[in-house]
Image (cartoon, rainbow, N blue to C red; front, side, top):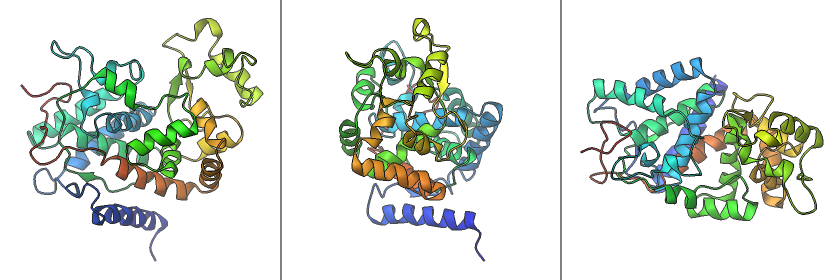
Length: 331
């Protein structure tokens, strides 16, 4: 009799194959490195496992890196590029990303190991996709097959990050439109928002809800009062810009990929305005309730949505390059 874990993996694999057969970026494939760098995914997983063992918050950072990469110029590793003499304002230094992205050193470590085994073969963009998958799996989610074959981009602009990434203040209409621009449905937007079940946030991303919400209410009335009091204690008004102050996105199980994020929204304990806004629309509210009631269902949907997101505007074939160092383009 098939175990529940194997059945779950089979279901996710089915969705990957379905997307493949429908011609969604079909130049990517599962097992892309089977001949050119057979242990590529194993090597990345080993590096990610060690990183999460040292710091359980690393999983959230890597998932977020992949998301922020794909939403700007597509999934081509541009978020990893450092500032240089010819490009002093890459994506990672934009106001939308500065001081909030993490996990770069983990990608560097994986790239170093891969270059030692298979020089010039595995792209940084694919490393990001593998690392995000492994982070979800190792933090309590599920394993899923990743389509690979991406190549790395050569351009990274801070202005594009600002105009493509959804801020934490977006309402449902704006969230739906932004995800639709990337080829993702409203249901997939709600599903991928569940990534906020792990990780931390700086105070500046939500303190307008505590101290400066509107002319008539200094505090967002949709916030649970006890939760709001807890947040004010963690982020006092005179220290909201302190980069060392962080709060968990979801306080009960901040390092486990589960559905407590959705349960918190139903209890009016969503941290961002964009999180709590999911209850303001009948369709997204139904999705929140459905996900809150089915952990396994949400995990399968999240895996399928990650596979689809990972195919946004990819570079393949002879376009782009395979960077030797994920932080700089090849000379």
